[in-house]
Image (cartoon, rainbow, N blue to C red; front, side):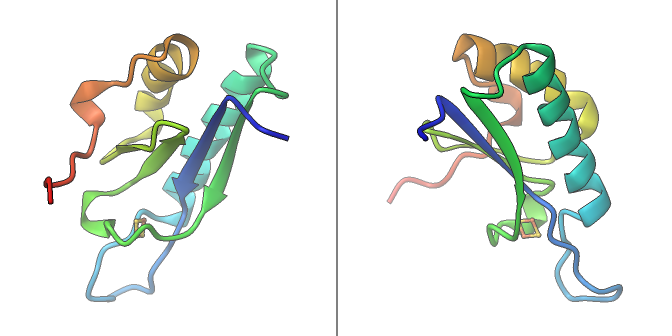
Length: 106
Ligand code: FES
């Protein structure tokens, strides 16, 4: 099945005292849960999928979520940002600029 939008949320959790920060299992799971709630509320289960995943290796910018097919990375998000991302990006194809992670051009 090909989804119209596929959302991946990092839930990687490092051990206490690890040299790098991590997005966090609790935070990532709560973010993914809110995306899933909105998918169900909007009856988009066959078109949009949100799932938990592991590290994208951009941990210092986390918590991280990525939306495909656009490949838009969101940084430093919290559960309170999910409704805005869903409304703008998932429903209206307008990524939320203030939360986007931009990569340096090669
Ligand atoms: S721990 Fe989330 S991007 Fe690395």
